Every structure is written in structure tokens, then in C-alpha cells.
Image 1 (cartoon, rainbow, N blue to C red):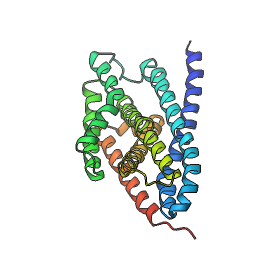
Image 2: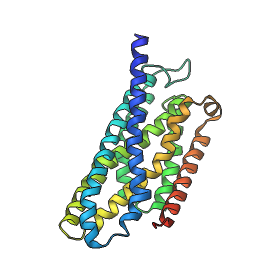
Image 3: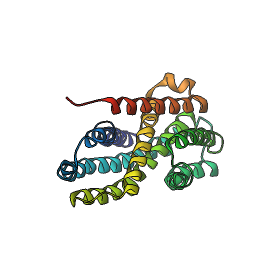
Image 4: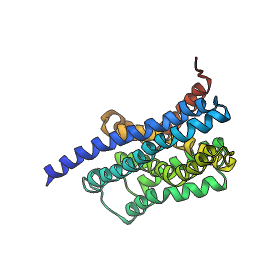
Length: 255
């Protein structure tokens, strides 16, 4: 049975990384390359280019997101819920642990409500998101009883679940309407354009600490000094890096 699980674990890891590259690669293309490129197009060029380019990019983008999320959940099941990495030695399942895992999957709806209420501006979302990340890690540790590896990966899973929700239920539906309007030579709804830009930026910011939480699972040195404070600092550093990348992307010019 252990050999069987190890084989499936290897397959899930491979697929998770493969689909993650597909998803995040297109996310960075859309935010750091395509956004600046499309801004240089005139109305007639946009009418020709965008209806051909965006649907192709968004196909790989959204399905990469879907399969990254599915394989991520499978890895949580095989390694953490079945494999025992969720808790430190001597600890085990409790009502608190179940509640905290449920919170991961409820996070997109909580996030969506918060963004619609007071986290509309990027600066506010940055600060509030950092505070909420710290609180969530503390809850994972003290309410859920998670190990360091457990609460690190579940913060990443929270980000990934929110990101996948944004892709399928906010970005893709809005993009369909925007692309159709551009194809017909009509101005896109400013509200939809703002929504896509907002959620896409949020996903880009969350992606960097998410990747760190994934990679850190295999770094013994990281785990030895990881705690809620250092993990929150990783989130902060990741978001500052993304801020710099946006600044750099906006200053790049074509020939």
C-alpha cells in the first residue's frame, strides 16, 4: 500500500508542477508582458489582436489553474491527511483541525466579500492581506494544531484556492464579455475591466509566497526556523518583489 501511495504521490507532484508552470507562466505573461503590449495598440489593432490572442492565452491559463488546484488537493490528501505531515509527532486530528481545513476551502468566499467591502484599493488589500495571513497561520498552529509544514502548506493552499476561484469565477467570465465587446468594436465595460485588473493583480501577488510555501516543503533548513512570524515575512517579501516586477514591467519598451 505504501508503494502504491508513493507512486501516486510522484505522479501528483509531477502533474502539480507541470500545471502550475502552465498557469503561473500565463499569469505572468498577462500581467508583466501582455498588459503593457495591449496598451500600445490602437482601437483597430485591438479589435483584430485581442479576440485572437486572449482566448488562446486564457484557455491554458484557466485549465492550468483548474488542474493545479485539483492535483494540489490530491497532494494534501496523500501527504498531509493520509501521510501524517499535517501534525507534529504525538498530535492528531481534532475538531479544530477539521474547522481550519474547511476554512481553507471557504477562503475564496470570505476573500470575495472582503474585497467587495473594504479591500478594493491595492494598498488596503496589501496591508489587510498581510495581517489576515499572519492571523491565519496562528490559527492553523494553535486551533488546528498543525505542524510547521502543515500550516505553511495550508497558507499556500489558501492562496491557491483563492487564486483558482478568481480565475474561474471572476476573471474568465468578465474576460468573455470584454473580448466580445472589443471584437464588435464596442467599448468594454469599465467595471469589468477594473475587476479583471484587480483580481489578476491579487493573483500575481499571492503567487510568489504560494510558490515559496510549495518549495519550502523540501527544504529542511527552512523548516527549522519557520514560524508564524517568518512565514508572514516571506509573504511580505514576496509581495514587495511583485511590486518591483510590476514597476519594472511598466517601464519596459519595445523597439
